[in-house]
Image 1 (cartoon, one colour):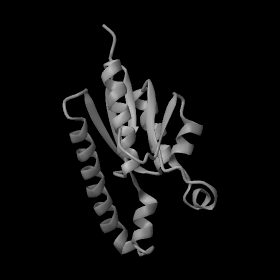
Image 2: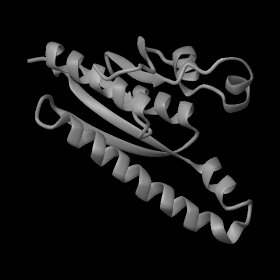
Image 3: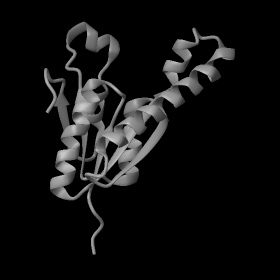
Image 4: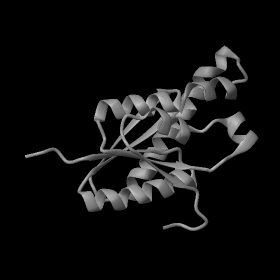
Length: 150
């Protein structure tokens, strides 16, 4: 008996990532796949929030970890009992950690949301979705920010 396919879904709590999760739920139901929800706690964000003060970094990191757990719990609750679901929380740089998790779990594909930023905003903020598309070893479905939910 073969193992059920997996679909990796990175979430950050934004409307865009939850929209991507909704798309992934539909695919998982049709494919009888397991969803693996992941969230990455950005270490650089903790340093930024602390103003670079070393004594404050640990507190900021703890707050981001708590926030990350809440995001994953909300996403898992959104899935409910419609499909099999598991979750991962990682620390580090988002693209690197999403790729690492994908390498570990060998998903059939990744579903990720994008805000669709362009120009200077994308240059300054970067694009996690773009980085995942460029580096992933499996197909990536990019779900754009929508005006209405599915």
